[in-house]
Length: 467
Image 1 (cartoon, helix red, strand yellow):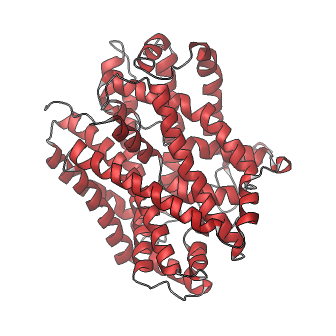
Image 2 (tube, rainbow, N blue to C red; image 1 turned 90 degrees about the vertical axis):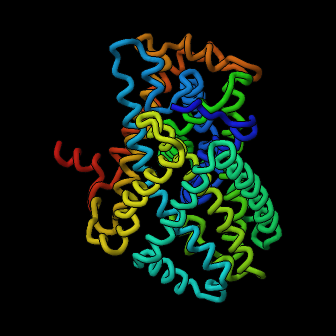
Image 3 (cartoon, rainbow, N blue to C red; image 1 turned 30 degrees about the vertical axis):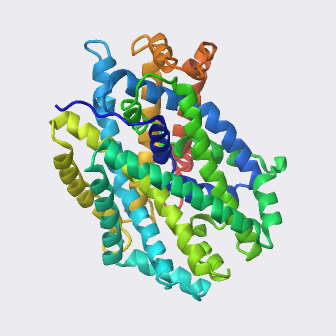
């Protein structure tokens, strides 16, 4: 096995790790959830959960990666005691990364298709009904779905084939800086719209009366899932850095960047919604169908739309590249393959495994795992988001705080090595007893409230059986 690669700079580590966290969940899911759950009230609760839930688990993942200098599939074997079975989660994490990419590649393809459509002027002047029809035509076309998905996969592994520093770090640096710049430009433009004041008030001014159990649960789930914690996404980048900086401060930097992108996405979208009379709570279609209508009502909408979907594409690709690197590192440690060979084989594997999702809206549309309207994507997303992420986070958490795992003392020593903000030792009771309960609640709520059929959630089904 060749000598382990390392990132070339602290900025590269921060931007690459932030790029993994920043993705479709920030710029697509966060705005429409904020719209549906009361605007500012949802944002406030989301920010609280982001730091009390996401930050500790992120520090733990980074610590495990840096201490082991291994990928998620091997880190437990380096740190666990002889005879223990923690390493089984490492293989589960690799499976979860593959599953995540099996549908994330298709969503990235959608964004790329919309970017190309705006750039070519295909969206100019179309009505709202035509915009909805275009979205449906895209989903129903196997050629479009598979073609744009394949472009995203090939681009990702081509970048990875140039190496960690020359490929992944260099491209992600420029991509993330361009993403942040594009977002600021688009936000400034939104501030000039007629409905900016009303939109910003809805989005940023918390209405405490709107805070209820539904808002709290929604914000808690979004805060947890936006960081993709639990499948080693952060552990792998922890293994690529030195011990010059403590990991709590670095994690906060990444959280701030992740939150900045999510918040600014709302600053772009909500002033436009209130200016052009678009329902902010219109749900998942807010990004594709609704924003197409918004840009068609704006002066120079073709170019603003192109910029918007370019920044969306950069956000999606930053996650794609980061997770591809995680898969690549795991496979290379198992097989001993060189980077280029691993890129070729893993790229082909991801292409094949992504086909069911890409074809799930057309050729395989008859497969409805959760009732009418559900698709392969819904099944894959459920398995990753509702099962692998929370259960995986619990595994990392228990390994870091349990005497039967790595132990809290070893975790603290690794997390606090180097300059910068330290992880407080007084927080041990919280991460040992309270945090596991919160993550377990996220897991149970995600399972019990999920609509497994047209008529019932699992909780409703269980209640009916009891009756």
